[in-house]
Image 1 (cartoon, rainbow, N blue to C red):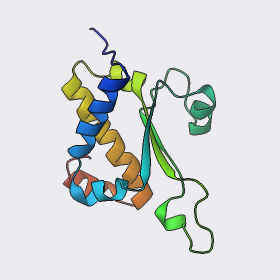
Image 2: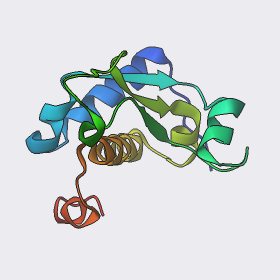
Image 3: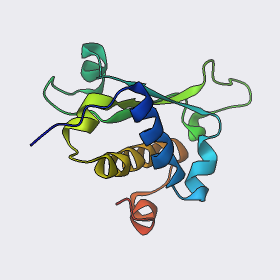
Length: 127
């Protein structure tokens, strides 16, 4: 099985196409969230997430969850969803599969931020 290897422009285009596929009720919440792509999670990130080096981490949310926000203590930094390119590429054989996996990863990360239930994610086809 051949592993996908996209260059920076190709992965950026794949992320944009994947985000365009996300239902509007979720995609609207991405307007103030930075989506970043890194090659792979650092050792520190894996440790922070409680994962071993060989466990795949496709993405993560960094920021203050909506339920934890306060007008008295606004977030200091913009919320960010980080996608990890190499683990995503390793689990996909085609660009279409990659875009679908990016879509699923972004939706799950934003769902945690918004407090969307697993049941609602399943209704939207992401369960």
